[in-house]
Structure formats: structure tokens, C-alpha cells
Amino acid sequence: MKTKAVLTIALCWMVAVATAPFAVAGTPAGRQAASPKGKMPGTVLLGSLAVKYAPVKFDHEKHVGTAGSCNECHHQHRGQETPLCGGCHTIDASSFKKNVQLGRIRPCRECHPASYDAGKLDRPTLSAAYHQACIKCHREVGSVGTDPKGCTEMCHESPAQARAR
Amino acid sequence: MEKPVKDAGGGNGRAEGKDGRATVNRRDFLRGVAVVGGAALLGAPSDAEALHDLTGWPDRMGMLTDLTECVGCRTCESACNAANGLPAPEVPFDEKSVFEKKRRPTASAYTVVNRYGSANGSGNPVYRKVQCNHCEEPSCASACPVHAYTKTPEGPVLYNQDVCFGCRYCMIACPYYAPAYDYESALEPKVVKCTMCHGRIKAGVIPACAENCPVGAITFGKREKLLKIARDRIRKSPDRYVDQIYGEVEAGGTSWLYLSGVPFGQLDYPTNLPRKPIVENTKGFLSAVPLVFTLWPALLGLCYTANRNKEEKG
Image (cartoon, rainbow over all chains, first blue to last red; front, side, top):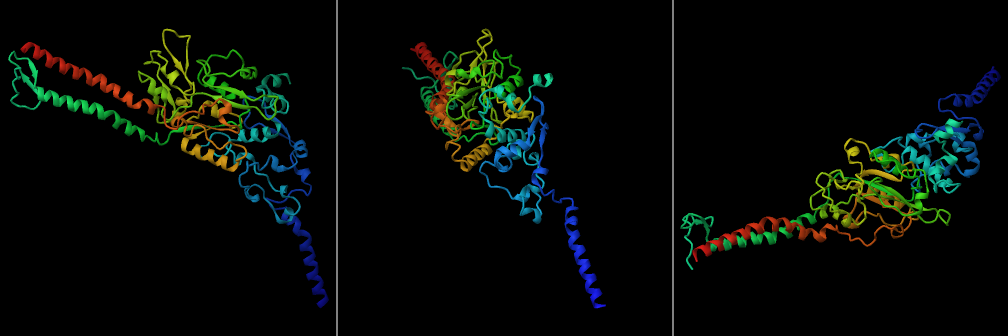
């Protein structure tokens, strides 16, 4: 009788341990797949501000390889105090040890206003934030930042180019 | 010499002569001269004293240009052209050949971008946007004989063509060479310069160049706030900027403020400007001019009347 009770408790405990990760994964803010690369965006179409040019096709995967660090683009706060990680990432303890980037990345537009905001003058607008982040490395690559035509050389597609396509 | 008949009232120095015409009591005349002359002498310095303490309109707006961000795309030029309904440029806005020489604002381009440093040399070229800086105490306004310039409470310095007669003193007075002259309209004199999109500001829209700058090199906002932002940027990135906000104190300060990574002198910014407004140099003299124009005829008229009476009586 005693042995049976012990076995039942042990079985319950084993079932609980085995199902715990699934319970965590089932929460809305649950962690994503273990492989960070698999969950990262591939080519992103940046088009929320497109007026003059066609939406920018941004090859995120390619940049992950060349940028060196995620901080080069994300969290680029020009020497300002780095905000708390949890401000942008939802992190659970189990994923934290492996990779901070597993959580949700807060979209740029949540902090950078899409248009003029008198209350956020010290923060670049969304357009400025995109351009500053890209131009930081791409300036003088080709004729970006030295020739007004450089805009359509690498990132933007001119209306004529869009028509030809 | 026969003394004029003293006025029974004795108050206003005016008396009826023998022929019934108004005469002037000499003592009262001298008293009047002393009072008027004293006012003329004292009036000017006291006005200048009061104006010296001007701190500006409290909520005036400004523009902060961060030259370290500008990449010379000329979008500001194109946006300005569209917002002001200016004629299409001779050279398209996406053309970089314009950078080969230094340009100044013209009647058909209220703002221009100039490039400094070689595009192929070491380091990135620096681009400087040029337009009216909208001084806190504009010297164009003080030089204008017909009051064609107004410093608005919103910050922009506006020009009124209706009263302008084309003397172009404003162009000489401006330390930044900002006003341009429309030589195409010979019969209707017209000075042209950036308006800081005053109409848009009044309508709650920000100036076109600031709205369209893709890299956020131009920030529009209250001048006081922009100064704080500029100081903050210098404090956080001391290696990126020279420790100066151009326009904070130059010639009494301007609505446009600039941050740069290279000394401003290298970018053709005038570096010899006094901290006090240029207006201060002429304010004492100019504030006396209306007094001279209004009081001297009165004084001379009094002298004439007194002398005429004397001649008639003598």
C-alpha cells in the first residue's frame, strides 16, 4: 500500500516535470524556437513611410552576418544610457541564459514617432532613425551620402526603377 | 527790446500780440526748449536701455541643424521649393554638380546646401544648409527704413514687400548674407529670403525642410528646448561635436541653431560676430532719428515764430 502511494506521487511528479516546458511555451509571451537564426526575419519590406520611393527591401539575414553585433542597428542610442532589456525584449528566465534576442523585439515605431511629435523632439522620427542607422555604415559606400542620386543606388527604388520592374 | 505782453494765464507761454497774432513769451519758450531738448537727449538712451533687456518672445520656435547628420541629399531644397511654389531649378535637385561651387540663397531658392571637404578625401564631406537664420534681434529689421521686417512672436523674421522700396540696406546689414534680391522684378522691388514657413507654423504644420529631412538633421521646436537638446547631444557625444552651438549667442542669437563636428569657421560661418545684437550699435542713434524728425521742426518753428515776432516788433 505504501509502495503504491510512493509510486503514484513519483508518477505525478514526473508528469508535472515533463509537461512544464509545454505549459510555459503555451503562454502568449512564450519563448520562440531554440535556434535564434531560425526565428530572425529574413528579408523585411520597410514600407510604412513610403511616399517618394517604393518600400525598401531590407535583407535582415545578410545584415546579421555583416553587422557584427545586433547593437549596431538595434539599441543604437548614440551614447545614451542603454534602456532596460525588458523594455524591448520579453524574456523568460530559461531563454535568458542562451540568448537575449529570443524575446519579442519592440518595433522601432513604438519609440520613434512616424511624424513630428513636439513632445519627443530629442528622439529621431522613424524615418530619421532608419536613415541614421543605415547611413552610419553605408555612408560613402558607393555614393551614399556623397551624391543625392546615391539614395537610389543601394536602398531605395526610384519611381522609374519601379516602373521598369 | 520790447517785452512781449505776458499771458494773463501765464501757463502755456502763448500770448496775444498787439496785432492779435500768437506770440511766445521768451522765458516760456526757453523753458519749452529745455523740456523738449531734455526729452530728446534723455529719450534715446532710456529707450535703448529698455530694449537692451529684451529676452525675446517666450515661446518662439527655432530650428536645430545637426551638420553631422546631413548627407547632402538636397531634400530640404526640394521641399522648400515645393512649399513656397518656387520655379523649377535649372539643375535638378538630385544633381551633385551644384556642390562644386559655394552657393547663396537666391530669389528662386530660399535655402541651399553647400559641401565642404572633398567627397573623395579622407573623412566624410560636411554639408552646410544656408538660409536666413531668423535673428533674435534682426539687423535687417533695424536697417530697414520702412519697417518691412518683423520679428514675429513665433520666431520667424518676415519681410513685407508692400512697403519695400528696394534700398537693399537689409542685404548689407545681414551678417549672414541671407536676403537675396529679385532682380527680375525691376519695377516692384522684392527682397527674398526664407520665411521659416511662418504660414505653416501658424497652421500647426512644421517647416517643410524639417518635415522632409530624411535623416533628422533639422529639428523644429521651441528654441529654448532645442538649446537643451543641443547641449545634451554635445554632452553625450563630446567626440562627435565641437563644443559650440552656433546661433546661441552670435549677434544676439538666432532662431536657427547649428551643431557641427568641425569648427564653424571651416564651414564659412562668420566667427567674428559680437555676442550682442548688431542692432545695439545703431539703436541709440536710430532711436533718436524719430525724435529729431518730430521735435526739430517744432523747435525750429518756435525759433522762427519768435524771431518773426521780434523782427516785426523791432
